[in-house]
Length: 134
Image (tube, rainbow, N blue to C red; front, side, top):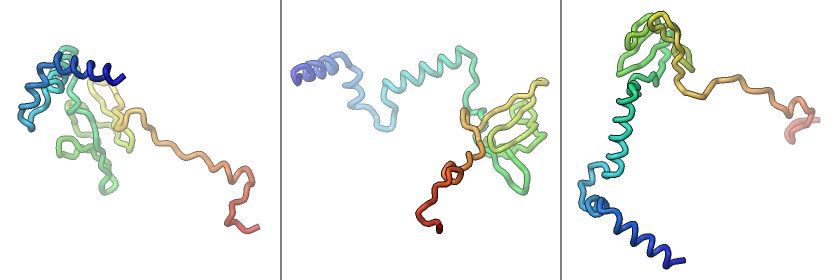
């Protein structure tokens, strides 16, 4: 078993000439493998026409009873334009934007929704807790 592992390690070392270059590389630069994968991902997103993730809404602030979207260090309130879309509504979970006559909901946390908690099951079952008096 150890002979197989040693052979596998030897093959990997022989087949990757980039490893020798990475051993002498500048420590502040990205490794060549990671740099190549990032460049490929950027090229794929540019080819698909997808917008960069910089325009995604990531922060909402509530101040003085009003809600604001914080984007690039600036606060945007209801009725203001944000990247060409008018802000219609702001909540803790999402921002509604109207663009070209269409209303769209931009969630702050994809896949996460705020719900009220279910009532405790132990109170309904009649089971007494140890600190309750009879």
